[in-house]
Amino acid sequence: MKSRIAVTGATGFLGQHVINHLLDSGIEAVATARTPSGASNRCCFVPLDIANPPPDAFERLGAPEVLIHLAWHGLPNYRSRHHFEQGLPHHYGFLKGLIEAGLQKLVVAGTCFEYGLQSGALSEQTPTDPCTAYGFAKDALRRQLEYLTAEHATQLVWTRLFYLWGEGQASGSLYAQLSVAAQRGEPQFKMSGGEQLRDYLHVAEAARHLVTLAMRPCAFSLINLCSGRPISIRRLVERWISEQGWTIRPQFGCYPYPDYEPLAFWGDAARLNQTVSV
Amino acid sequence: MKSRIAVTGATGFLGQHVINHLLDSGIEAVATARTPSGASNRCCFVPLDIANPPPDAFERLGAPEVLIHLAWHGLPNYRSRHHFEQGLPHHYGFLKGLIEAGLQKLVVAGTCFEYGLQSGALSEQTPTDPCTAYGFAKDALRRQLEYLTAEHATQLVWTRLFYLWGEGQASGSLYAQLSVAAQRGEPQFKMSGGEQLRDYLHVAEAARHLVTLAMRPCAFSLINLCSGRPISIRRLVERWISEQGWTIRPQFGCYPYPDYEPLAFWGDAARLNQTVSV
Image 1: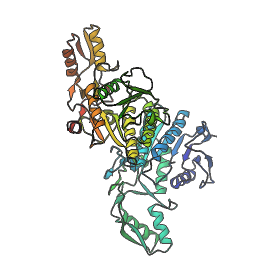
Image 2: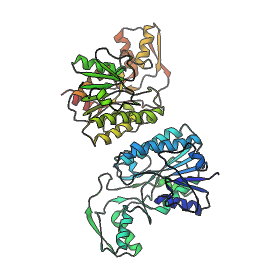
Image 3: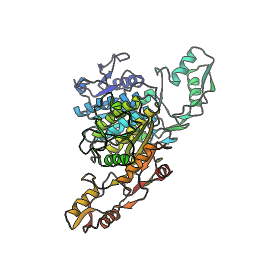
Image 4: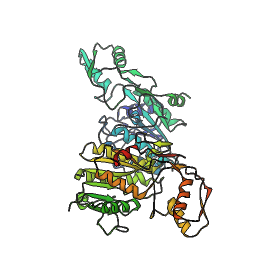
């Protein structure tokens, strides 16, 4: 069997949207994850353990032309050493096997956490300086893949995801917490000061961009996957409440700002816009 | 047996000088390397394979108070992937074992290659941006050890070595090549343009600094090990020739400048001077 695109982490929040967008676009896809829980029944699912892949992983995935690699383990615990002690070598080993087996194009979900505590509009030329084990591990995986793909015919497209939101997101996320509280009929939603500026993209839009980057020739090997528009968490929450017609009221200043993020940072979307709007 | 200081890479160019300086200073030392070739017969030698250490490595090294970790494999091939595919996980795993076994202080030889293609006086606050697999692997090892030691009582002192020179250096080094050619009576020494500015420290001085950093309380966890004085390669070669009374003449412009190094960079030695001069 020969597939066009294989997707790891296909049963996750973003992965499900990517699979659906691929299938809706008529693109042949193979979904993979450790277990099939949450897998779409619209396409082929191949169970794979990235920490211990079979030697014929590339063939089992249908010898895809492109891999969209979304899998990552143990979030949102950004400070855990497992990100580089297990995650980094496991993901590098898994992807190296596919590259050496003949994978032509690899689109990977990196993270804005690679930038670390840098403020303002972050462009892909901004040198990375991660301050969390998670950000470090993704940054290190990117660098290792750059050295590796330089010796192979594989095209690497490393995307840096900023913040996503949407229905079905993990229960710890801001949108999921707000949604649950609102639907429970709670009068107030405790949150941080809300003045921090972030870059939020709807998950369906992020999935659409990933599919575009996978299908089209891409002039860049490093692309922010972001809206390019900073928004305060305060305004974001108010907008979600208004759009959904919820009655819950935000209660600001209940939690401190996290110390591993700058108060104001967002993505420079020039490369993304240039690439997906052609 | 309880030793004060253990040294990995003890049979190497710098390691031999560190061992001799320790013994000359009356400090109890244990030397380790994969094989005893080149080991001093003045102190205890423990053979250890860092890629496959025994579970009681800390005890075999005499439960040292300090480890000076100089070992690294496969230089000067700066571009080889083995630096991060094998070197990084092997060294991290080895050091993690010692830290978890109770090591109190760890002094590691990092490299100016962690800075990558950045010019001028490089201070420890300069964000790293390695451009070689070697520089990346050392930078990644440092970050991983920072995350790890933050969870333990181990003090980490990461030193960034600039260029060393001295008798007994590996045959590919500039000083060794010049020395061999001069002693062979060759009339001319082919070299690059020689205008590049570098930071050269005599190996005995570097060894003395490492021992000082190992023995004294240290206010910094990151210290350039350098002279702090830029010198052109041209002037350096002319000085070596003059000091040794050789008759060989440098022939400039025979080789291109390496593309993985800036034309002019040297270390900011303020932290080192502040620490070792007290």
